Image (cartoon, rainbow, N blue to C red):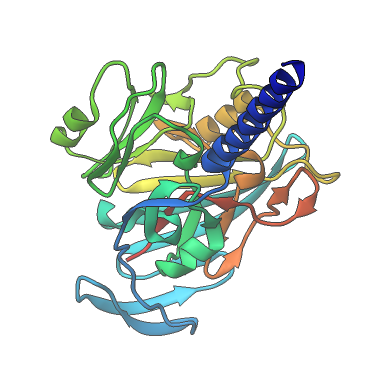
Length: 305
């Protein structure tokens, strides 16, 4: 009788371990593509001054270098800063229309544990400029709206999101206050749900000791901001190396404010922080806090056709 009980207990433990391992794999490892997305793209010539044609059928000359890109619709200037013992990479972006501000999923698919390097996603959609997004795949809830389509409408209480309207304007919202469907009805094209908001109405909106979860005070960071109509800034700060300390949220917010943004938002940082421009990785992404290597992510925000 005792032996039978011990065998039963042993079987129970084995089943429990197997179930636990499966749940961990299902949550963090096993890839589940729930929707395949057709990301718009176009081909861009690699020459420094050439004729191009985009998806709208327009044409014009392109001038580009390691720090600049300009055509009839898009103008980007890359500027490097050194503040708080950290290299900060800022892309100043002016577009003729908000249609050139886009988002894209890893592997052109929405789902759980669907990831790809920022540079690989960017190349797949022929992005001119790209930064990592909000890593929606690391969360079970929180709105996911991309390019005018709702992929996840389960609200995450207390989530402070950046919504991007069809006209390219930014707004900070709380998911407790509005549904995903209502956002779509208001003309929202994209929702980025990481946070927090860094700047609102032109002023810093975080406190000096505010951080994301249990993150260290100084980290690699990624942020996006809007200065005025069709004028954006993409920012990535290095960190976690002997040469780069990284930024606190407050330091990042102060930097964004200094650029003259009206609204700025913190995206996924740490090892995810990556900037891609004109076919090159601009910053020094870190993996596991040491090696200079890109981390695979769920999504990107980019400028392109």
